[in-house]
Image (cartoon, rainbow, N blue to C red; front, top):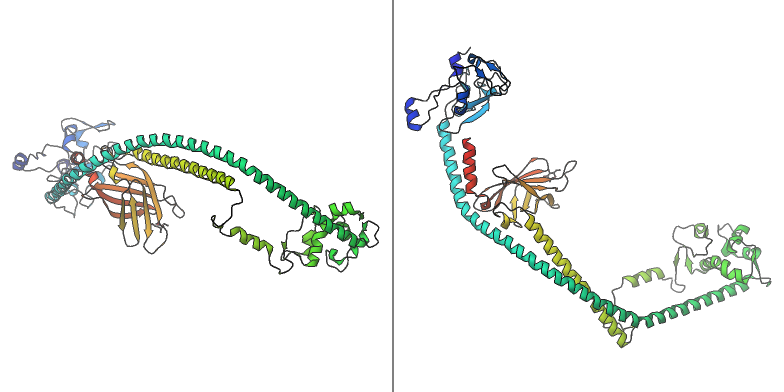
Length: 524
Ligand code: MAN
């Protein structure tokens, strides 16, 4: 069992040190209580828990029994699970640790005060040594920040210039856009006029073309009728001016199911469900059904590979030719294929292709083509300007730090290689990863937002919505930023699957004000 004094008193610094170093921590206070809280622990009064929840006799402070909800009555023992033990750590930084770590056999405080009564473990006071190291490190950091802040000043200047340049560029682009848009409407008017003249000039050709097509169609129709007439005569064996089912049944070409005879039903199909037809009905209704089968018989029409003959005609009552390939009668060259070849052929050189138009019309067509091109070009210029405007606006909306110190980093791409991957960070753009043994570049996230503390909101960057992780969320990256004399990535880790952490140094983060902040923070 420990004595009251053992729990109660903090260590005493010899009086000489107290005066010389000003480390007068021998203000009587219970063990584990900081100097600033000492007035709240007055031995002459009852103790009120710091959360105000209870008041207890002062003798119950540090009596190894937890009385207060907030654990404030046991700062120097492990009795409360939520107590706080304060180590003074003279010579280094004071520290607050959970009081549950008091006398647990592990040295937490550099002055060893947290293990004051452990039966086997004694902790050496290493605060002076640690303090020296910490001060040297702080000194090194301060010098680095000082040096870096000169570069930072330059970055600030460049950043501000970049921003004002962009603002000017934006103004100029907006002017350019207005001009480019009026150019588009001017070109559109010219194009419309040229097209209207072109249209008039081409009308003559179109009409001639239509006439030509109509004449060709009429010719084909005539030839078809003639052919139908001839076949009618041939089939009308009794020459009574009618084709009957029995006349059809004598022709093996109509044996659709290829069973060796033309049934009545088969014959009926070819007469368009009539029992007999005169020449007119034959030409208009029966001939379209008969013709493909005669072509097959003559070898002009080839059924598609694997298609049963029945499929060819089965339900077709509309006279459409079955879906099949036509073959050239003479050399069996496939016409379809030939057509396709024609379609994919390179267009002939214009200079060698004779114009289908007269000289005057050709001039008008050329003028309209040129006007169309100029209009498309003018539209493209507007699109390009719009694109530039959007990029500049996006940049102007980005937060480059309170003094624009990060602005010049926008667009800079930094690489880092480890054993397996090449990582790349295009600042304010995208973070990527590429395996050294090949494979595609993987997106680790696009610029999202700053993340930091209240005192330094520009300490971390977040890059979000990268390629989705197999069976998991989208990849994302945090970039921790520290002061350094150059801008580079110093390490990359993946502490959790598909969550990446880049360590980056840059003079843009060498802010002397931040140094004061962190010193203040340490002192708290
Ligand atoms: C790839 C890389 C790794 C990642 C795995 C997740 O191999 O992007 O960084 O952990 O995919 O499947």
